[in-house]
Length: 120
Image (cartoon, rainbow, N blue to C red; front, side, top):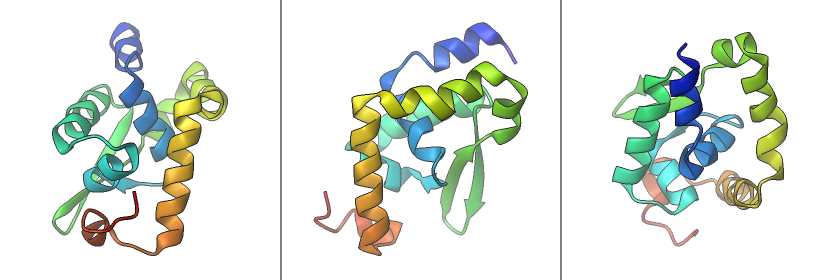
């Protein structure tokens, strides 16, 4: 782990928002873009940076790639785990994203249906 590069990866609001959502459950790009209200290119660019720094993992499932927190890295570096577990919850934008994630979870929609819905 290159500490400087990890800190740079944490220096963008959208990457913080992604980590906040992924700490709750694995999500695909289309779910993240809808919950965060960003375009696919924006979400993918930030996911790529987080993945490059090994902060998140990706797993192919059928035609979708699902992203999740790299628990090993966060458990190994306690200051990162502290950020993930304590600091993100106090940010207003993360609280808003949490509400949108909860709304999505309760909707029963799949990622295939989400972009065509009027949920958000």
